[in-house]
Image (cartoon, rainbow, N blue to C red; front, side, top):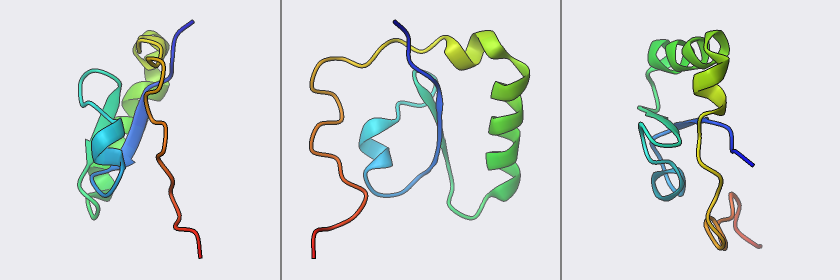
Length: 69
């Protein structure tokens, strides 16, 4: 089983989850052109999109996008 490449902003927990060149792209927050370019690259190259190793057991555990209130 394989994973999917991730395109995310270079903020918060994404810094811990995304390894550029390994499982996706980290883009500067305000760089819309780079974000679009990374998405276009993955959309046009299905092999690259799907060529991500599967998650390791426990990887990403405890990551939450929002805080409990």
